[in-house]
Image 1: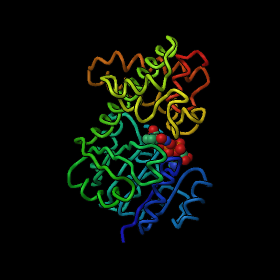
Image 2: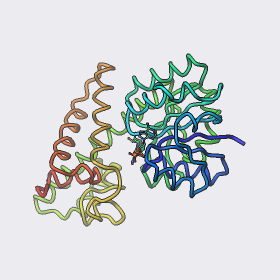
Image 3: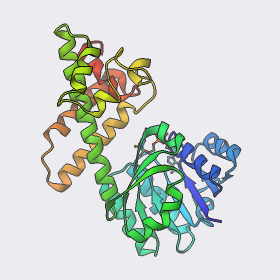
Length: 296
Ligand code: NAD
């Protein structure tokens, strides 16, 4: 049986690790928050108190951590994954971090004989719970084929973007476009409303016209247009403003590293930073609507 060491059992990692337990893998689970470990133990995982204990018998190590500095410490730090993983283990980092850190950690892993993938995800906490995430992979074909049977238990789309770091770049391109699209959609709906249009009627018109897009049709930011979206429940749940701000900040780092012009990505980052500073960091990112409607 494949032994999996899973580190980082938060909003995403918790349900992802639970899906691996349900699929019959032997999962050893660790988080710095003991309650998160306890929850996984109740679901059938073996609890581990340290990173070293989590990885020492693992054939595959998966990390789902907040940001680049946590990933660096977990892999490269004293008592970390590279010091303690079983020879030949496959390492998969699912966190969203900057591509440069992903490449550095993968190079260090390779130097010690480990295959490594960056595998950030799209699909949010609902996708993590349902096992329907999209994995966006950076790394070698052979490593991806080793990972596939495990990734398939947590997601339904496994997309190969390119070499190490490419998964992070692709993820951040997508989320920059999403941020821009959400702002554009909120801006347009608000302009229509301020000129006397019903947002639901306007959304229906634009959905059949050339302005159609995911934010408008699947995740409408205006209350009263759709059911079962964050706008219908005071923007609770979903994908937080602060997480979008983090991704837009990573996008600006990628733009600078690649020498790319991203004026709309830059403006989107500034607008989300203001929205967060206005106290909406924990609300879903579609709450940017409030920024335009004036109830911010
Ligand atoms: P989270 O803060 O809920 O979970 C992160 C977990 O990592 C926490 O439980 C924390 O205690 C743990 N942790 C931190 N440092 C650790 C260490 N050194 N050792 C062990 N555990 C440690 O975050 P999340 O929402 O699960 O997001 C995780 C990653 O996934 C982030 O990079 C985020 O950008 C990305 N992501 C999140 C979503 C979402 O909707 N939440 C969607 C797609 C991608």
